[in-house]
Image 1 (cartoon, one colour):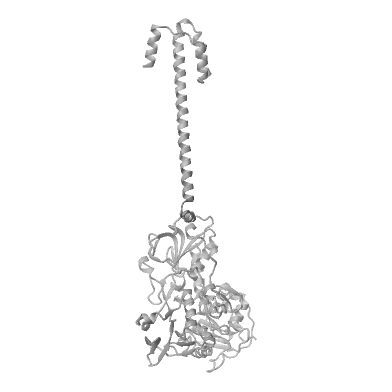
Image 2 (tube, helix red, strand yellow):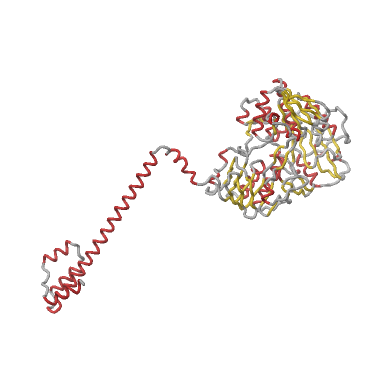
Length: 601
């Protein structure tokens, strides 16, 4: 419309040329020089095109000017809005920083990631020795691996053997707090495998550059979806995984007679297993006058000896009762079991063999234990050490097989329960390529099976051929190590000799440099242990009451050695392991005993 009207006006009345004033105006408006030149050309044009050129130049100039004004105005408004927005955000940040509770919000800033990761490549269920050994093995083979341990225990992974051994012989009055102890060789260490600084916070595990090991303490896996590679925790959170290890361990068994008793009895009972049980029992031993240990196996005998040492200085009465004929009656041959029983008695313990508990009740302020043969035992506190029940609750939801004979998750020789699920430690019922299907409840087995599971989780595909060992110390002066099937119902042959000052657990740890003997011995091969020929007597069963200083006990099945106990003989376990691995029939075990140098002074 504007163009039409201007054209009409131009037709009725010719436009006058733009004068100098108009040129100055265009310059003040910053009209481009090209348009100004077009104005000058139009003013000097021939009479026929003078009006049309002037109108065109004016229209172009006004259009350009309008566009420039519009762009300038838009940019200025956007700049003002941007400045206003930045000012608002800055003001809010300052208000949050100065408001109450800002400190707690600031400390929570790093917690932007959830406490429980939604996915981990390696998930280890259980926080004991087997899980830690697996984590260390995975990281050794895959330095960038991200490993998450989910542990029901509130404490970081720790070793259990000192709970019934060295910790009880500590002179530190604060041992229950420090959990540090002197080994038999005098060196001090903590029960924890690694300090807290070793571990990565669980929420940061998926994001740390080089991976690491994280531990979720006080968390329990309650459901396992094998097909979906997912687990559910007791707090409702879920974790998916690529590969999973079940190392749930076991729970201490109780006696039916005690389970039937009332709450008053339960409140005076310790089922010894965890570090909290040690702390509790150590405190109780300082407060009561009498403690009764029920159980004559490894744990029961060790605790009886440890408490017996305190009986001498504090007037504490320590009673040990069990159904067998003597201490370690299910493991040691009868003559050695009887000798062990006398050794425990010399430690200040009132040992009562052939004792079967019928009932337990409270009378007055004391516990009364009635035995099936009519005897009664009065005490203030009971410690039950009668075995371990493998934790297999996850088998139902996961659809995993539980062995009906030995208990535990049934796995193959590579410790696999499924293609991406492994089991290690006390909860694993594995196939031993030499001795058949077994389930073992000892520290060294947890180390070895955990390490193997970790290797296989990173592609090793190794069978479980390594024979794990176990050991028990009745104080710093008497101890034994065993391997294979050690069952007192099997025929045995023992070769003994006089002991020297070097033949004690204390001396053994001084030589190896570690109180946990399996840490050094499981790494050795038989060829690494020096042996020297020596004369040895004909194998014989020692006479009753004889002092068994040191010796070797061979356990036979079909004339083949399937188990060995080294009595006060240390640092020779690789030799015993090789004998069992070879699986040969030996005509003269006296010659085999020479390999252990038991007659050296």
